[in-house]
Image (cartoon, rainbow, N blue to C red; front, top):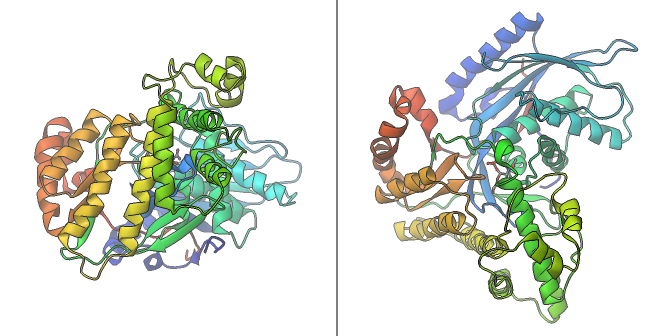
Length: 512
Ligand code: NG1
Ligand code: MG
């Protein structure tokens, strides 16, 4: 499973649900027409990668804990014509977007060395460059010494940017897939594509985990994914319980745009530093440090600490839930400073200097904080991982015709996840809290933010017979006053509030 190949498909119904085929057909036709008018030919192929919604398991992928996302139907398309690069010339990329607000760009690829990405110039094509750079690095690491092909490209995406549904990961995955395909890779292993896309996305300055790219590549129709990162990337597909009433997932936008690149130093990247330092400080206090590097973005991880702690205890390993409960208690007891730790305090515990800490953890991805909240962040990570485990057990062991109370048990875990994101991880915001509150009162059994937070999207587990009520409540209680444009047309509404089914992961489409 982890090694399976990215599918090559030739018809749209291999990608989309029947009810979406008409509108998708129109969109693909528009893409083909504009491609023809821009470049005077048809594309050779289209690489496609979808967005994702995370059902549960927030901000724990970079601590190498399991998460439970699914791919959604909205996606990003990269249509490509391959043009041979003339001898002694640098390969050229011409890239445009079907949406006019994204201006086109032409640039050369150096035949040697890295593709430069200018993070001060927030051009939309930076994400393409991430995929390009990562793909070329992987090809060269594999011994390829060809001249990269010149490409003519037209992009179109339906995933709102900054909306928590991972437009960025879809863009990076589709771009990397396009570049590998254009440079002669006929078969691409899914896990290889994921690993390359994870590393690539960090070129824009966010120290991300691997959940989004995994969901975008491994997703499939009608199934959620149980993604694990250790000992190696694995994405296990499984279906939702058959219940009575049937269950639905509704995704609702806050319309607060969370631009992670702008706020990374006080939000996302800071959380990666805090959780990594929590692992190091705990390891020191428990006498099991220093921790080995285990593929966390900054080296060690809270999951690596858990492994080390129980190895040192010896004897028979407790089950996963018991291990996590122990770690949660150990973290609360040992990280006893509720106010947060200064860099100097952390350096003194780790018997190093503040400068060395800055150098090791805060230089490639700078962060700003007076105090590092080690206790709260570690408590979130261990308790969230417990919830993911419990949720997965409920999903996998559900009886036929599971009852409403069974769904409520699952939903409760999502509600607790939201509380923890708000109170311990401080990654919610007023608008997300409000959407969750309104939805729960109208019949959602589980409501939470999805993705990084600080804006973006919320996800709600709703018995099917309550979906209309929840939609009406959100319309009245949130959008009508705050974002009335969402009520202007059915199309606008379907962008604000999506009832989503799991969709298919990344493919290369050759049916043109
Ligand atoms: P968003 O902001 O939704 O793209 C981010 C990270 C994930 C994960 C979640 C929080 C990227 C590409 N993705 O998602 O890896 O850490 O936040 O669970 O940065
Ligand atoms: Mg993203």
